[in-house]
Amino acid sequence: MKNVTIKSIWNDFVAFIMTDNVLMLAVAFVMGGLTKKVIDDFVAFIINPFIGAIVGKPEFSNTLKIGEGVIQYGAFINTAINLVMTGAVLFVIVKAYDSYRARKTAAGQEPETPSEEVLLLRRIAESLDSRAG
Image (cartoon, rainbow, N blue to C red; front, side, top):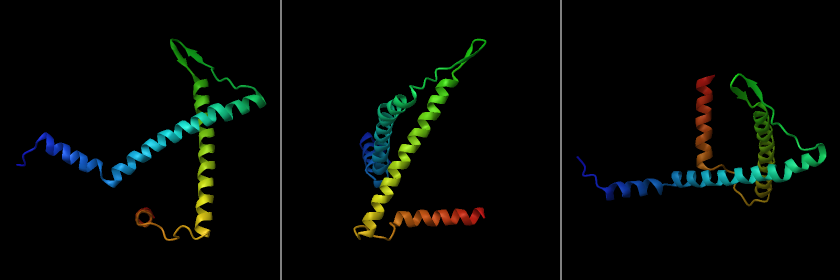
C-alpha cells in the first residue's frame, strides 16, 4: 500500500488544481460571477431607472396571506422580470460577440477551422443525436 503523507496529498492536489481544465473552470466561474454582477448593476442602475422614468417605478411588493403563511408573489414577479431583462442583456452581448468574431473571420484574422474541442463536442452531439433518433 502506498505511503500517504500530507506532502504527497498536497502535491497531488496542486497537480490537480494546475490542470488546464480546472484552471479554465475556475476562470470561467470567476468571470461568470463578475459578468453577473455587471449585468445586475446594468439592469438595476440603467434599465430600471430608464423604465421608471418612462412609466413610473414598478412596485411588486404584493403578498397574499393564507392563515399564518404569506405568499410573496410580487417578489416572484420581480425576479421573473429581472430574469427576462438579464437574458436580454446577455443576448445583446452574445450577438455583439458573434458580430465581432464574424468581422475577424472575414478579415482573415481568425482561423475558420474549429478547434479540437469544438470538433469533439460536435462528434459527441452527433453521437447523441444518432442514439436518440
